[in-house]
Amino acid sequence: MGEELATSSSSSLLFRALKLALPALRDADGGRALARALTVAASLADLQMDAEVISAGILREALDAGSVSMSDVKAQIGISTAHLLHESLRLKHAPSKLDILDDESAGALRKFCLTYYDIRAVILELALKLDIMRHLDDLPKYLQRIKSLEVMKIYAPLAHAVGAGNLSLELEDLSFRYLFPHSYNHVDQWLRSQESECKALINLYKEQLLQALKADDELKRIVQDISIQGRYKSRFSTMKKLVKDGRKPEEVNDILGLRVILEPRCDDNSLDRGPRACHRTHEIIQALWKEVPGRTKDYISRPKENGYQSLHVAIDVSEPGKMRPLMEIQIRTKEMEKSAVGGDASHSLYKGGLTDPGEAKRLKTIMLAAAELAALRLRDLPDSDRGVVNCKNPAFRQLDKNGDGRISIEELTEVMEDLGAGGKDATELMHLLDANSDGSLSSDEFESFQRQIELMRSLEDDDDHYRRILKEKLHTIDSAGLIHVYRKELGDKLPVS
Ligand SMILES: Nc1nc2c(ncn2[C@@H]2O[C@H](COP(=O)(O)OP(=O)(O)OP(=O)(O)O)[C@@H](O)[C@H]2O)c(=O)[nH]1
Ligand SMILES: Nc1ncnc2c1ncn2[C@@H]1O[C@H](COP(=O)(O)OP(=O)(O)OP(=O)(O)O)[C@@H](O)[C@H]1O
Ligand SMILES: [Ca+2]
Ligand SMILES: [Ca+2]
Image (tube, rainbow, N blue to C red; front, side):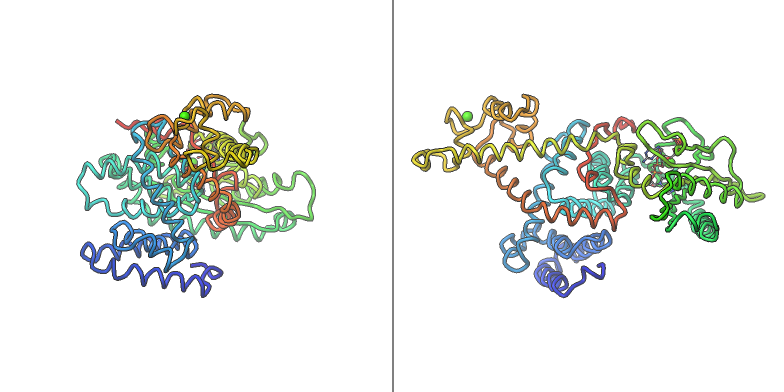
């Protein structure tokens, strides 16, 4: 755990969680249950999650097995951990409502998750999925496929959308392996054969470039910070590129990748200091290595339509008698990076065809407005009216105009129209709230919706806090990115037959 999180209260929380889970897990599943719970906890710690999430990770398996109850968790660990477990269990059941082969449903689930859940519960669920995926060999083949498909179409894109990039790539690669074992082996063998050499090369070039940039007088004058990220391309991403336009492996020019991020000095207000720093970096690269002609793309002088800005250079890192894939170097300022990972040119949008983040936000706003309206009507009710109705929930009674104990789609549409929203929004809302899919809302379904609204409000502060942690520590997207939703499905890009 990070230093600031490893306070005595969080250690005590983890300790209590372990104490509660240990007896239940020690003997279960030949000792494997305990190992699994600890692996999940470790993954969550790697993802910089707080003690509440990690303790939920430890307890989840015991809860599933029925050896620990939710009231045990509430009493011995605390309400926040119990809440996270509750959220994660809700999330667990969500996909079973859907036909996972249907792209529209997968998109709806992602939207649902990001709009309705504590974001930490989403990360918890993703860590649990990762653990399942890492141990798929133990399951029968058909289950391996079903789980992989679910991960490929729902959880890997979800991880990408919430900014857990590395988790998303690992989930993708693992499901790729079980869904398409032959093509996976092909790509895997090829990448593996050069992996350690390429990774060493990435580190070496990264270090050399950083030294050269830091030593340059012009850059010293205009930038206050320089950082370089390196990455070796994932199996699935490589496969997609190879499949997409029939390229030969040696024509994939970004197997090795570096990204230079420059932060111009605050005291230099000249407008072009960012572009100047990027072009100067380009010159330094040209002096160091062999640039591949015709492969350079200057999206700084000419930004892409979506606003994406960056300078891309391909360099030849082969040596005499030793052919190697090309290395792509992306050069950008911190501001350009911010836009590329969270803004309009967002990486999630670029890869997944995400819709405008506003769309998901709108749905949430409508939900909140619907609750407001219900509350408002409630206040307008004369006191004498309260309590005489059969249904105990007055807000529900207000919406259930004909008093038949259910809120129909017509009744919901009427409310939404009062709010200035259309019938389509009512249908969407009904779809999300109608847990048993019978086409109308019972008082139970409505009450659970009200509880969610309350929870969402109380979590607004938490949400902000975790958003910052995710952005900073996971090097992820901005606040809006947390509710990005995929429109274009992964299935579009990958033929799943
Ligand atoms: N976030 C974001 N990244 C982008 C965008 N466009 C390109 N990139 C990044 O830049 C890389 C190279 O893009 P280009 O230089 O346009 O290359 P290309 O024509 O797509 O060619 P290949 O990389 O060979 O497929 C991509 O693989 C991404 O990593 C964008 O709109 N948004
Ligand atoms: N040259 C690079 N240097 C460092 N990181 C990179 C580089 N190119 C991409 N990345 C990052 O690596 C991760 C995986 O990217 P990946 O290679 O799968 O996709 P991509 O390069 O953005 O798209 P494409 O497959 O279309 O080229 C993303 O987080 C991406 O931002
Ligand atoms: Ca790329
Ligand atoms: Ca009704």
